[in-house]
Length: 354
Image 1 (cartoon, helix red, strand yellow):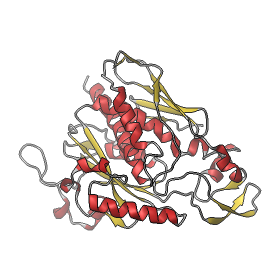
Image 2 (tube, helix red, strand yellow):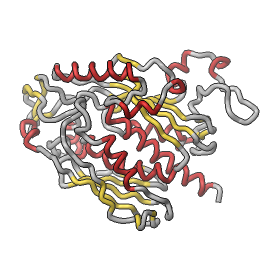
Image 3 (cartoon, helix red, strand yellow):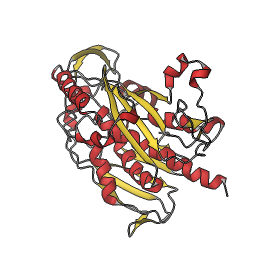
Image 4 (cartoon, rainbow, N blue to C red):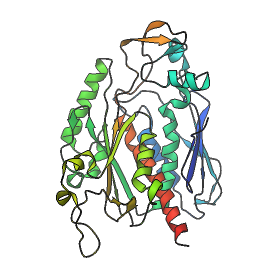
């Protein structure tokens, strides 16, 4: 199976399945001498882990990251950083009813067609459980980046949208509610709606918005390795993501050039930021901001028509522990993937000036 490695210089390889003994990863290319706070890694893991509130899956995983190599006496050694995260709370029996059944909108059918077999226990390698490895690696990347601040938050759940611009929000409010929305009143409505959807045996999607500040100008490579292209690849690699837009996004297509151009100030900053902090695929020093759209979780507790591996029509219904809305737990994943991209370009930028 290809496709398990992300990055050029700062490279992450992940391994493991949802219901295996453990998941884990190897980070290659992290420079020596970077101070690593292991408690900060666990704080990031706690933001993503299941069972953290009443509106997420109740699977109980500690998500404790065990560092195997590459960090000694609180600093990176320059050698590969290996880590594992044990799976403590698998309930594989919850999936026995779909052993030979393809769940709608899951990877069951495509994995079977490509590999000739599949791990039906929670989706195996296609499970969002794998994203725990990304959060662990992203927490290390954040500590390499130091002054660069990456902040993601829930800006929409279904048709409930946060109407304020990110510059008008208090990011200190994000972790004060289960939805991770930086507006208390909107967060309350979102949480109520998610609970209502769950009571119907259904699921709902939403949008995570991300803002990156203190980014130096010059990160990104021209042509095929543009900064926004890599951010798009990173976000679209996350389970359940259906869309990515940065800067003015699709709304920018409605404007005239005279309305959309970011005019310069004397210090090189711009009066507006429709570019989203990126021009020509390279950061310009302004805030980078983008949105990531997540579909409704495919497993629902309602009966659905589908087919089995023999091509026969059957009826199935979801069982087990699943998120009614993936967005709240996706917030730290979005941050982690952004950190991996920026860490990679940070190192690439250093080598290009040697």
